[in-house]
Structures are given as C-alpha cells and as structure tokens.
Length: 466
Ligand SMILES: Cc1ncc(COP(=O)(O)O)c(C=O)c1O
Picture 1 (cartoon, helix red, strand yellow):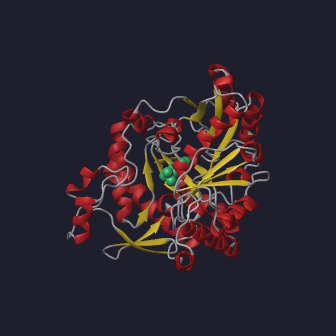
Picture 2 (cartoon, protein in one colour):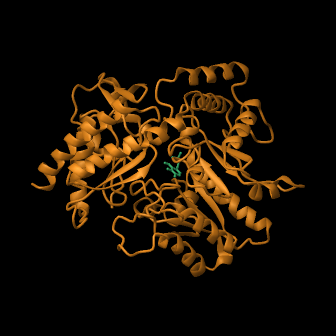
C-alpha cells in the first residue's frame, strides 16, 4: 500500500512565490511524493497562533494535527523562544557526553517528578526515533548485563509506527515503510494490534494481549528482549487499549523476563489528559520513550525514561551505557522544555483535556451518527480517528485504488482547501485523524465539525456513491 502520509494532492498552484520556487528546487520533504509538486503548490506555513496557522497567502487553517502531534501547548508561545534566548546568553551549548549542565539536570529531575513512580533516570535524545533506538539498545544491553545476551528480539504491533532509523524501523509494523530498506536490524516481530472494529463479537477483549504471549512462546522467551507498544496506537487510526490490556501485557512480560517499553512519542505530555499514557491506563512500563510535546516542538528533543530496575545496573562500578547523541539534552531545548512544562502547570493543560475530551468525542460521534461514510470513531484525550467505510452496516472498506482516489485524490486537498489540517491516512484502513493542540476548545471543535461534515458529505456524494 502506498505510504505518502502528509500531503497527498495539494491544491492547484496560483502565483508562484520565490519560496515556492526554492522549495521545489531545494527542499526534500519527508514522506512526500515530491513529483506531485511539479504542477501544484507546496503548502508553505509561515505563522502560527494558538490552534491556528497561516500559509504564505495569508489563509488561516485550524491545525487539527498539532503540526504532526507536536505543538501541544499551541502555536505562538513567544515565551518558549525567550527561554531559549535567555539560555543562549548563559550557555548556548554543552554536551551530555561526560558533562552535565543546569538545564538538562533540571529537566531530567522535572521529567522524573512527573513520570510514573520508580522511573527516575532520563536519557535525552534529539527526537522520537532516537529515543526508540536508544530504548532498543538499552534493553539488549540490560539483558547482556544479566547474562542473557541472546535476548535480542523486539515484539511490536502490526501497523504501528515507531520511527525510521534502522533499529526503530524493525519495530515499525508498516510493510510499505520497511520493504525498500531491508534487511533491517534483525529481531523485529509483529503481533495483532487492538483494532477491534472488525473483530468477531464473541472475541475475548484481551485476545490481542494474549497474542503477545503466544509470540513470545513461539520465538522462545530466552530470545525476546522487549515488547514495545504505544498507549494508544497512532498508525491505523488511534487504537485505544481494551480495559485490562496493559495489565495483562505487564503480567506476560514479567512472566517471561521481557522488558516493556511504552512508546509515548505522541501519547505523553497531555495528549491523553495525563503527562504520560501509562498514567491514564495505570500500568508500570520499564521504559518510556517520548519526544514531540516535551518541548511542544519549539525545539527538537526526545527522551528515554528508565525505571530503576533498568537503570540501576548501569550506575555501578565501571559499567557504562555505550551510547550517545551529541545534541541529547541540548541546553536550549532543555530550557524550552522547562518553560513548556511551566505552561502545562500554569494552564493545567492536562486537566483541560480531561474536561473537554467528552465534548470532542461527542462531536465526533455526531459525525458517526449523521454521515454514512464514517464507520467508526476511536481514540482518547485529544487524539481521535474516524474510519471511513463504503458500507456502514457491513463495515466494508475501500480497495487500495478507491482509497487512493478518496484520500489523495480528494480528501487531503479538500480538507486543506476548507482550512482544516488533519491527517487522511491509509497505512491501515482509511482514516481521518485529529490531534488538535491541547488548548483547543468548543470553537475549534465546532470548526472541525463544520469542515468534516461538508467535506465528508461531498466525498460520499461525489466519490463513493457516484
Ligand atoms: C510512537 C512513535 N514513535 C516514534 C516516532 C518517531 O519520532 P521522530 O519522528 O521524532 O523520529 C514517532 C513519530 O511520529 C511516533 O509516533
């Protein structure tokens, strides 16, 4: 299946600005069919304020994707830049390789104070893939210290996205992203996710958790290093865990000596109404990986948070985790993260999400009730997906070609033209994903409702029923 995620078919071009020319000539955009821009404009976003951004023509959009699940505190927070400027005057850069500096120390302590109990040690990276890569290496190293060097396998879920570096990619469960880069780092194994939309009615809700145990037994527990899962799986469309799922997975990991990584690159920093997804679903991972909302993306930064069980053996004698990234814990990024967390506290962004979640969910369920193309609504917090179907009664999905026509040929462009940035994605079945900044409120929900109603009705009339 094609894997172009972000842009699909952009609006037809108007007058070409200098930026357009330069972008087309020099900028290599990520996960983007660059050829699509031969006769279309590159969408160039120049400004942001609150939940909204503006393009180079001055047109306003509701950022229903928080700039790729990132800008949790919203756009236009000058104080985050000011925190960086203050830090630059003091110390623009020093590394965490054998040295420490105040912002990284303070941030590590702050993150540890917000993390689930018993997770006290923070290793900074430059982003999410690096955090996952770090976690996979740490798990192998930890097992080796315990005399279990043969434990190298990683169990992840089908259709899950855990990043693009070769190690993280072995955990990513999207064939279209993997196949052209093979061979990947060995050991990646995939099990069913918690997308229960088409499950038989009598299936045990914890079936997907038990599949993890089956896979561990199949591989041989003595070869399995870790299980990596998101609290709510993003790719495929916001698969929330059934009640008891995480507790069952925790039991299984403990039974076979396997480490449990909660990949919270999206699901931390208020996205699910708590600082961490593990807190919302009440489980204790061995490692948390995070990025994006840690700085609300005002600077690139990721982190691995280790439980005492995992970190302690590395804190003794001559033992060292032989891994590092020059910019991990960058002082400007750390200063921004600290200022970002000040905003979280001052404005109680987690509390706001918890309070408003039912309203956002209710609005999306209204679309499900009223629009035949909407087959399912799922998610949590400010992280939701609508699955699009051809027939709501039979749950029939679209063929690959139909999905291509619907998502790339129509929806992506139409939503953007109507002033809503969200994700029309078909890495699993076709979905529209919404992930607004955590400051979004009733007016933003009404805006999303209006645009989705218009555009999805048009899609049904023109593309599906046609
Ligand atoms: C769950 C998860 N893990 C890892 C990553 C990779 O993060 P990055 O793009 O910062 O490398 C992502 C990115 O979206 C993600 O959602």
